[in-house]
Length: 104
Image (tube, rainbow, N blue to C red; front, side, top):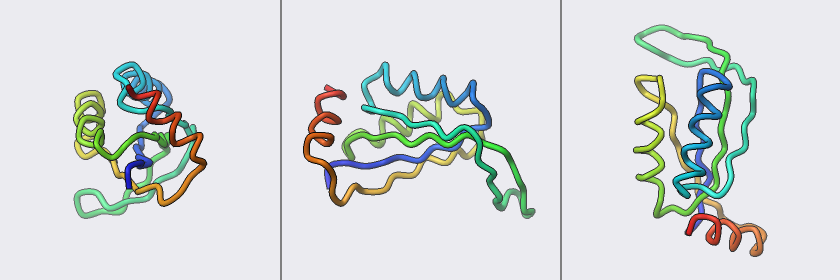
């Protein structure tokens, strides 16, 4: 599985734009979609918390995951940011080729 989709949650629009722009400019990802308003519920320090967040969905190749993770951690305001990848099992061959060409 050469291609992955990475999910990254952010506390707001400003930080999500910054992260997306830095990843794109570094050619670590080909595309970042932003879902501007999600509500997250999660465990944090022994309690259930709730937060309004933005969700970034980034498309790239698996070989770049560690570099994406490092870049996001250097920018992100969270102590433990969500940076998770899922494999792309299948996709439009032209789109997948575009991903590879965009991150060269």
